[in-house]
Image (cartoon, rainbow, N blue to C red):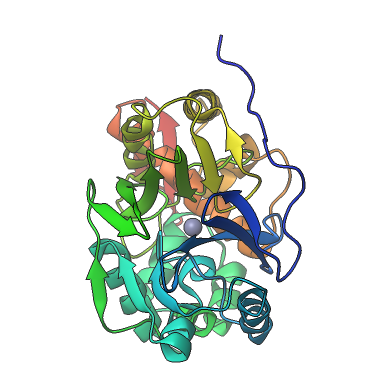
Length: 343
Ligand SMILES: [Zn+2]
């Protein structure tokens, strides 16, 4: 029996505060306007004559101001030398360009995350390309939803981030990054994003897990038009064992939710959660369904707007895994949407 998760810290840092989690390691929270997430956790690591910042927050003037408040605190007044972004999502990389402009900070990331973020930040179109609309038509979106999608433009990622630095300092799986006097080992996970970097410090027994491992919610794993046949859930579940070798009493510093202990329990629960949802999906597909019709099977509450789009990506991820395991088949329905059925 694996024990329940433990949340070892009392309280959370308020806006503009930095809470010590270990010698030289501080937890900062920044607001994000994503319902259900509300905050992102960012970490400051003492790097001798400066700071290394792990993840940065969304692009916003308010967050810039909050960062200035953090660095005006007694003992925190030194430059940011380096930014390490776990992955390309805007709440993580959004202020990397600001740190570069403000401090000349270097950007350290995996190749896959940096290139994908740079690429998305350069792409902006007045409306979605035909292949994107086709992807969502095949997923079961009706004419009205597709027409609404056209009005929202395409490639809005660039608006959520400050200019992503052109110069990359590449990090790779297994590399040990020296920060201050200590080493942080890079452990790359997949599925939530292409090459998500987590950082493990053996001496302090800390794991900065980004969005790869979260304590209370299951990280988002979705299929999108950029890789319409992707199977990110297989990649996600396949990369979780990369964390098995870490000590179970490691303190995990996630990007959302609270700092926790009980890594093995969390890894097991994430696996079980997906196994259950996959079984429920196969059962529901005794009657063939479009991807969009599977949302009530996977999500207890009704999803709206952007949430529904994320949910749809997640549903397709589950369906693709099931196809690749031979448990579900896909055929093109009469109205141009894919129909999924239990095999
Ligand atoms: Zn993310």
